[in-house]
Image (cartoon, rainbow, N blue to C red; front, side, top):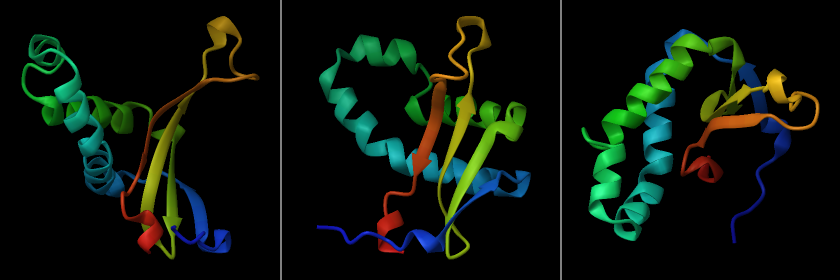
Length: 116
């Protein structure tokens, strides 16, 4: 069982552009096992249709666009000044989900974040 990290060591900060490559790396690491299992769970033509240039290329492109175009909505979690995760929050004003929900998009946590 993993021990609970001390929440006092955790801070949430606004994304800074110089963190971009590091956040993309965290996302790729965090989602790698999910996509590996998904690849085996769906027919190859489905996976290949969604990711014709490969999962990682598509994911990097999509996430880079989030960081580049919605940077004011990106929060970065740090433990002892080390990035351990990030999230981008997008509200849906057209369906009034801003107050009672929203879309937590692209949240990522370093796979070894609890080891810090």
